[in-house]
Length: 230
Length: 321
Image 1 (spheres, each protein chain N blue to C red):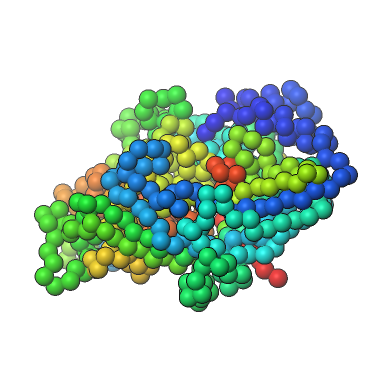
Image 2: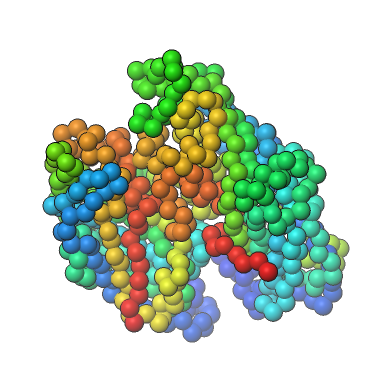
């Protein structure tokens, strides 16, 4: 709706010389190799599925309420296998040429301005209305924890998205000059601060340190990286 | 997010097509103003800015280094002006009308875009509202803010993460891991250098209109973002204000939260930072690995314009000559 209104305003009233753009969005994970966490746990992931989207790119320096009209958007919600490091197309970014300076996206759960509650944005029963489903083994010395979690990262108010950030450096670009949006997602950092020894029955559940660590990783500490290909 | 504001668009088109602005000249005064959350504190009762978890907050000092105001003529980007001086001023002692600190004379009448800087005290002039020793601390510790105050709650508790708490001998936690704490002080000398702008009045035009009769504009600093449950760029109406997280950061239970304690605590250590919180910071270069960084990031969002007007914060450090 925002984009349509923006198109009407731009093309219906003023000859701006701005052309529509449609770019493939390609995403990749990190592969299945084990990694070591802050507290010395060696973690091997056996499943790391992420619900991703929608995604909006904005001209404004700050996303959120200061981005009143998206410059481009990928409205699809998709499920990504983050143990697959092969780049794969996950959707199309549709919008207008022009400089983008901020990005915002959800992890598969959205809360529309007029909605009563967040709702899933992906059609995949295996996610069970969650954003991130993870399974694996953490080992440290003689300790061995088989863990699992299904984390829902929901907007805390209508119209908000769970990741909103300014772009920096080479992330800032003119969409008219680009050919592909590449999204790289690393779930290892999301588990870096999990205290596996505190998990009950290996479960990462809401209200626990592990749940907070994963959510902080997803929304604040290790957010999907953006690069561009021409 | 909101729908595009047609009135704003029309105004921008009018500006872009050259309407307004003549060859006459006028002056503009810039006033620094503290939100009443700074001068009067925050209470748990009533109002849109109430603290939702029962704490009250008072600020004894809210010193800030600010200035370096840049103006750009809306219809001619080559026409610029600036008031470059930075001042360190204690916002907690300001009158409600604010304090006039900058004046620019003889500017072409018309609309000018406005941006300003929260900078380092070492590059700033000390205002009389800030004692010399406080100013010196800001200089020595490379600070942009010196914020000192207290949380109070009659039945208040501090519930530091058990794995990090270092209570004094003889002090034992209750069954929930909490300790009595009716008052918790804090003293933060913070580096949160930020450029704010271009600024826009709430539901109004961007920048300031300079007229022959003289104009004024207000740089408003909010004081409650430390207690927000997220980083809401723009609209603050849906924000919840909570203070328990800060009380829980008193790891040694001495009644004062320090920078060292905040640096030792990861967001995931605090049970208070639950699903009510949205930690998506706009600043990619400030990774929220600890609560000190969280404080820095929140303070980098506090610059406003004409009260509730917005100034985008780019989060980029700026270069000085």
